[in-house]
Structures are given as structure tokens and as C-alpha cells.
Length: 120
Image: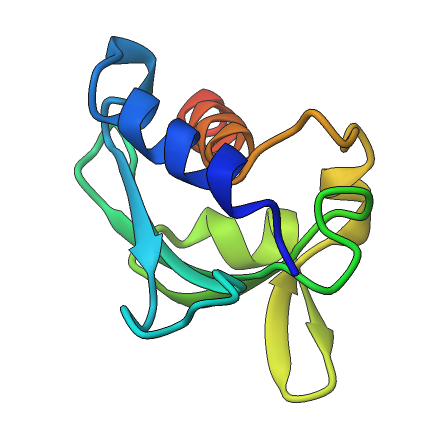
């Protein structure tokens, strides 16, 4: 089970800081008491939306979540960051190599936004 109190604190911080501009995330299903499946949206500098689904497993935050690419209009995202894992198109594991237990879902999304903005 995820650390629910830590996650709720981060959601509140998300609402109050500029570094979170152009990202948004929340539980995919409001009744998910495990707080394990999140949906996020990142808006790049050109206004393109990228939608991600974030799976936080039993060992989160010790291990990074799986980040699935749901949709994007940014043509560079699939070739630069995405690899097929089973039926899902996910961010490459190397993309999450900087993950440490203190990392957050917001950190992933901010980094993702910064990298796609840099390459577009």
C-alpha cells in the first residue's frame, strides 16, 4: 500500500507552487483507497497534452511506479521516452533511473515536462 499521508501532503503542495504549472494529477478512481493508480496530464510549451497513467505498486515509494503513456499529440514523446511493455506503452525504465524513495509522482511529471519542453 502506498504511503497515503505522504501522497495527500504532496497533492496539497501541488496546488500551491508554481513549479507544478502545466501538470495535473489525481486518482484515476476516487474510491481507490490504496491510492495506487493515478492519472496525470502534462502540457508542453506548445500546448500539447500528454496523458499518463501512473501505477504505484506494493513497494512504492521504494520502487518507482510504472508510467504508462495513454495519449499525446507531441510527436517526439513516443520515440524518445516510450517502450512497449506487454500491451502498454510506458516510459522507459531508464527514464526513472534517478528514482529514490523520496521521489514523488509530481517529480516524474515535472521532469517529463521539462525534458519534452527542452526537446521541442
